[in-house]
Image (cartoon, rainbow, N blue to C red; front, side):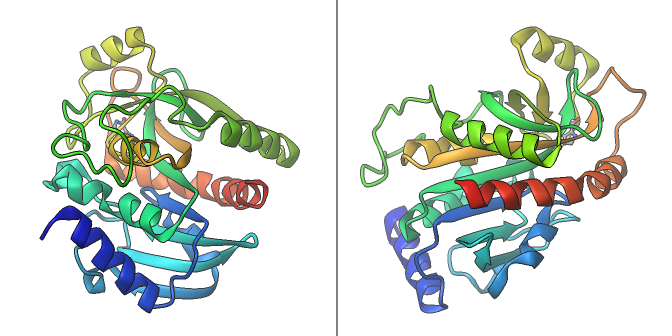
Length: 269
Ligand code: HPA
């Protein structure tokens, strides 16, 4: 089956399930999926029931699509995303973004847990730009002309207008929202201290194992993007050891601010 046929089939399935005219997609990273529980008039669909959809395998990722109203907007939220390190082809990792576009979403809020290069645990960071260190690109292969051009401009991949609104909202809520460059790696290993020193010299402020493929696909199709990283730890070399439990614990602490911030931003977009 061609990718276009798959996208259309999944779009039609979701429409049939009641996913009507969504305005925004929310991709919720590790530990941040709870936001979807606040969606009103929710239609909840298990990933296993969605045709052509990947399978979610990471602890802390629920594997559900939730559609409904949040802050007066129609949203599709993904509780759990697909990672490259799980062995998913990037076509699978980015498929939900394609479907969001096909359903008519104008923008997407992409969130993640990330290691801080400079920023410390507990920081919320609006992504200003990214560095793709995955050695791969989800747009390789035949270009989907229906979505966008062969050689898409990435100069404003993280939409300045959305970020300005996010900064204003954060200020009004008294939540500190930093800004910085996200460097996307494949994982699943955390980085070596030497890699982090190199990334720092390259201009990165946060490092993580997601987001970059989804944002490339969103930008290709002209979707507006807001990226938010929850910094869960100092990156390798800035602290003695790294582990997933710490990422989960710190996310627990940031998530109230995170949820409040994203809800308030949505109302303004
Ligand atoms: N590196 C990569 N991904 C991450 C990290 C990190 O330090 N923390 C949370 N996700």
